[in-house]
Amino acid sequence: MKLSPLTDCAKNPLPVFGYGFVTDCVEAAGAVPAGSVYFIQVKMSKDANGGIEKQLPVPTAGQFYLLRAKKSDVLLGRPISVYTAKKAANGAINLSFLILKKGSGTQELCSLESGDGIQLIGPLGNSFPRPAADDKICIVGGGIGVAPVAGFASTLPEKSYDFYASFKSGSYGLEHIQPASLTVTTDDGSVGVHGMLPAALTADTLHKNGYSVVYACGPTPMLAYVQQICREAGVRSFLSMENRMACGVGACLGCTITTTEGNKRCCKDGPVFDGSILQFTPPAHKPLYGPAKAAASPADAKTAGSSVASGENAATAAPRTAPAPRVAPDISVDIAGVHFDNPVIAASGTFGYGAEYKTVFDVNRLGGICSKGLTLQPRQGNTGTRLVETASGLINSIGLENPGIAHFIDHELPAMLALKPVTIANLSGSSLETYVEGAKLLDATAVPMIELNISCPNVKAGGMAFGMDCKSAATVTQAVRAVTKKPLMVKLTPNAPDLIGIALAVTEAGADALSLVNTFQAMAIDLNTGKPIFDNIRAGFSGPAVKPIALRMCYDVVQAMNRLPEDRRIPVVGLGGIATWQDAVEFIMAGAAAVQVGTATFANPLAMTQIVDGLVQFMQSRGFTRLEDFRASAQR
Image (cartoon, rainbow, N blue to C red; front, side, top):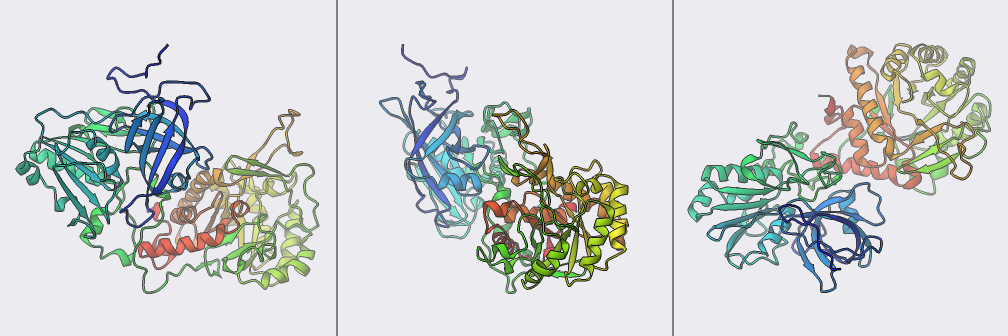
């Protein structure tokens, strides 16, 4: 029996899920900077879905696929518009895409090589409506948005349309079009008309050229402009939109956009919409720039905050290229009177005492190092399995194994103090008395700061038990404060029912700073035995998976701190899932004075130095000269 492709009522092909393989992946010629856009060809065969043969639908102009490398580190496929599509005699589909290398997902796709497997779901969405025979057609593409409209143009008769392409610099994706007229604009004047789209296309242009319909895809500000001039000229428009999406098939409702007809799903009702129903609203917040960017040119103002048609989250994008300030940004920070050369601190329990990583990378580039958790007496730690890897995280049940504070003072502390980063002694205990006695011993040393750990979830006595309610947290903080003059940073647990209350309680009890959050309680079960893997059943979960929750908690505590009189506020050091410079910037924007990095070092030993470098580059690209220029910007 001959298989027929499934279509909806409008005869649009319905999506299928399957796997293909890359036949080519090369830099797109003409893209600036070189290597920023890739041309990828993918072949999808009829038995691509686990050997089950099916008739593969051929996408129509304007549709897209969710693409994800078969071996991938990202959760979601990226929505990428079809550039070209052709069905082979054997029923396979040959697809090509133009992909802007923007964030982790698209970087992964652009790194694929010939023969690599790729996961596809599609074709998705609707198509550009065919023009009438007597239509005078204008097609507009902006940046990577050139791909779908160029694909559409290639399906029209030669010289039956005019094409406008707008780029920041260079040009690409125009190889397959045959327009009556081609106009290219570039913001830097490197190709064609110098300027953005308004330099070549206005309402007056639409009227004078007699256009009756406009098809466009590109950054949202550009599409809003196209809608505006089409309204002024009385010309129909069909605009291909984008939004962040998860499912791609209209199920999750995560990609809705507002229209005069109510919310519409970008993936299912779009991505192509009648321009007359779209409601463009200015962004709630303008892009954040420092003083060095204050005198931006009009062209900069037009492009600032523009989105891309790749479906990639702009929050994960690399910093914009911009001239570096004359003076390198100052990334130093003072916390409770202690000076740190930079705000990146190695988290307790993940970095030993610093010397362990000396041959792996230059640990002297760090701002600080927190010691392994220390107790008054030596501890052997927990029995049984201690580590379980999970998706985007790690569960640990170490149990504060350490040689004891006296041994630390005699042996590990001198080596830590010899390093350039600020040494922070992480103090834990099993009782109020052991905390106090341990603090007395540390107070007699040259250690610059104590981190009071009342948040370890891996011990049956002490640790997190002290950090779960306001009274006990305040009691241990006050007791330690009474026996040491050292700056005291209190490390809080995310498992407490009232984190803000505890933060305020330890602040009143004498804390000089807060660090949060420690690990989240979790567990794992052995499939062979059907029993919990950890002897203590519960253990501490850390890693990238906890970062959004930790970020929210940091934000909440800073917000609560800002409600206090200024002389009663203390700094907050953020931690929990920080793995990249982008993560660190988010925590600082949430109000963190500095950040601690832990689990990320296991996956990438250079993570912390890369965060330092990325932070500097971010500040240079935005014109920031100090951390205060953007610290707590999310709180404003």
